[in-house]
Image (tube, rainbow, N blue to C red; front, side, top):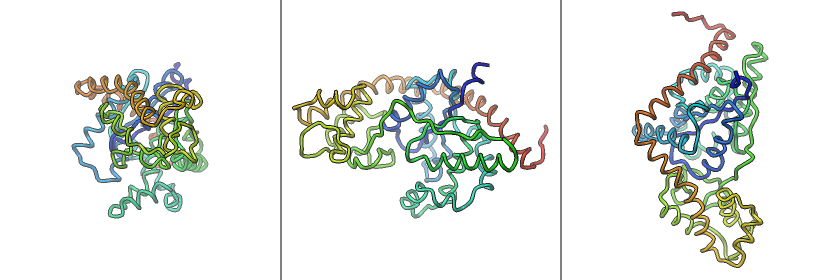
Length: 335
């Protein structure tokens, strides 16, 4: 009964590529903070990954790795619903129905479609255009009140809201119209080599810190991070984007404010500062990596968590889907 009174939060992460400290700082560790206050549903959105060609064996392994990371950062399979998107067929089914209520112009205006189409000129497939509709289905299936988002996902949330309102206006209240959730704890983590751009797991390896990077790899990547010639640790995103990015990462890992970091490293060079940022990241990530390694070694437990999570997710999703079927006039199915 208590769970029903809580607001529902839904979020998901693609298993394409290696998750970065940007995913950790901006999403994963914040998800853990929400478990007691909200009804949390967290998904490995593996069907979204198919818009780009994937190595099947690697994709299967990454799905398990991301699920293990969910738990390695402290998420509880008892408190939160943890599952793989492809294990709940209702996602794909609702996506098709919502496609029939989505206008081509809405999808063509999506900034991420334009960006991804430019990156994958030889594979501009229909899924690349329509995956925001699948994202809307992910959210609306679970009657999510809130969706944790970054600035680059506002268009997708807006489409989800528009589709919910459009459907509700046509057929009466069916979907909760979701709002964005903006975490109190977090920082926008930028590329180590191009600090004007967000850190991305799809970029060259030296531009990001992966959550599972070995300590010596983390240290090496930070040593090579772009700074400037001033040799002064000062927070100034416009004029010192590289240093400011490193300060944001250090602050996220240690809890220090920008003013405290400036005072802490006053008179010290960038070498000492970069080493300290690396040490702070290593200290935070080490227990996560250790727990992740333990979970990955227990294949039976991981499969059990995914199976039970999918069953819990499907029970919620299918209730919504039955309502949608009835509203649009699909023939009832009975065994």
